[in-house]
Length: 182
Image (cartoon, rainbow, N blue to C red; front, side):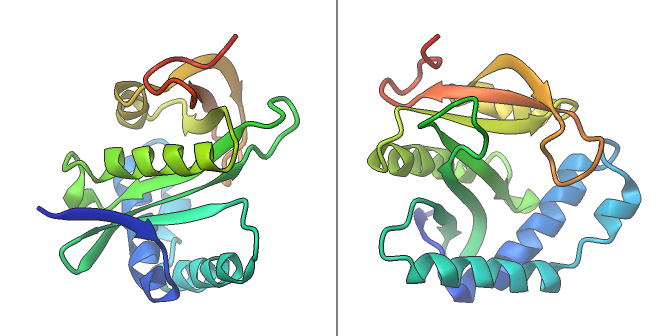
């Protein structure tokens, strides 16, 4: 399968909305309330993603990035990243979201997106990055660990779903494959 990563464009929004809906339902069933997962609407998500992509395109000096993985003519995954959103890691970057269509799991799309996001965050001047993963999401956490991220022992409720406990992962962007500086 030929796979490329590229910047998202507004025409990708419908596929991204479906990927979030389907990815959340496949990955988080049993971890998040069924009602929350069942309420995800791909069309509503697409509208929000399209607005976000358009806004990024209008920013003359963007500090955030929105990438997609494309296989053949289909978008099969996406990643969103930018500056870390909280005060405790000044200057760090953050991977806000990384999702792949469940039909394309374990096909290399997630790893390609992560490499591209790390490279772009490094290009924006970040020397380290963080991300948050659901504590109960053993599969997702295993993926992050396999691509070089390490849990740093910090947990919290940072997810868009109330009560969902997350674990923070970090990565030194100066030395790919190494844990963050201590």
